[in-house]
Image 1 (cartoon, rainbow, N blue to C red):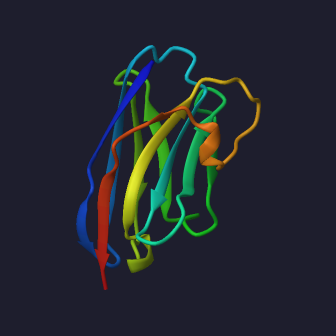
Image 2 (cartoon, rainbow, N blue to C red; image 1 turned 180 degrees about the vertical axis):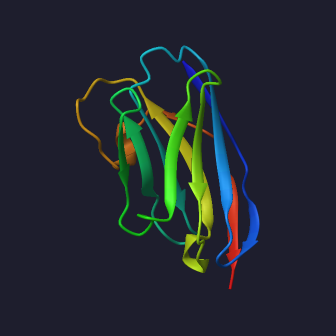
Length: 126
């Protein structure tokens, strides 16, 4: 079992920055895939950024490329999402997700992730 706890959400004006954190605990060894998803009211959950291959490889949704950066501090077992140049359309509940199945590829399909955090709200005002 892996427990994920997010923090760092809040309200910010368009153009601003936020950094989300996701601290993992429990049996984290072999957590091959970690990522960030978001869900806005009335919309489906969508993948934002992912980290895999022992933290070497990253993937980003087209909508956040060049603005968001995903990275991990292994010593702290914490995953981060640095969000810059925020836009009103980035407003959503952000979730951290993890999975230990060695698929060998990245997928933004939320059904392929076993562990989820409780979410942290990000609100960007224009």
